[in-house]
Length: 169
Length: 107
Image (tube, rainbow over all chains, first blue to last red):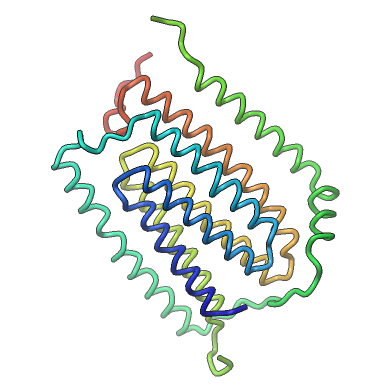
């Protein structure tokens, strides 16, 4: 794998995550989350998981962004009504995050390098993926697929209940 | 690269996943807006997805891990949809998304 490209992708991922958390407008936050999903999908592709990358791209970057944008527009995005005091307090709270991340990153990297940690494993699998994946997903994990179907149905039921208009005046 | 006693690829992936995870936890602790808290949960899930894919790549079991990631994405979407629905219903009830103002356990 090409290390500089991976480093660029991982850097973009951290930047997108911090942007999704720190940007004041919720709409822009949701778009930063979509950008994070896209970068993660490319990274998954590089790690040899094209089907997971496809799911990540279509479902997380597409569907979840649509859900967030509709939730934000339904709840009304009104940053103008926020008081100046509150905005200043929020800015002070979130400005500590990059410094905090920098400290953690440097500390963990130095500890890793000082101890010479190497996770052993087979680092370059040459096996074809799709055939084995098909067998794994459809034949060996049938109970999980049933569980997923139940979760999706439960989600659909929850949405019907939560979005139901009340009859009371 | 062979002179180093560590793999820069392993280090960069684990450190960046850790940073993304910490970003999500930080936002979950300090945010006061429900929708931003859901975004924080999503950010944390991205970090876990990256770590899962990395473990599969490292151990040569990427097919197994792909099926786990797909299961996780399905759960992620359902969590996001249900949480957004709850946020919407909280907003309809209280006309606010600020968790500090949700202090009435009535009706």
